[in-house]
Length: 68
Image (cartoon, rainbow, N blue to C red; front, side, top):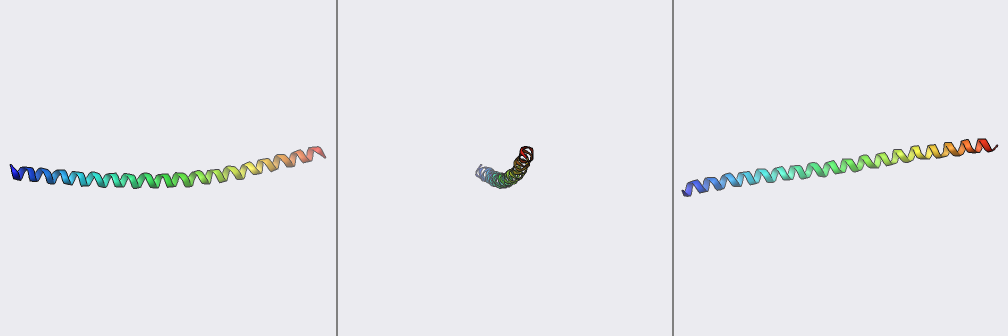
């Protein structure tokens, strides 16, 4: 019985280690994913701002032409 319990303990220990490794891998995956999403959203913000300023200046330019 003792040998059986020792073997079961080893199996449980291996399962725990493999699950811990899986959790660490998932944690790293989601951390990296969050970094990429943040980088992407910052890029989109810059792009939107660039085109918004072009549209604003274009409208101001058209308004200026209409006045004169």
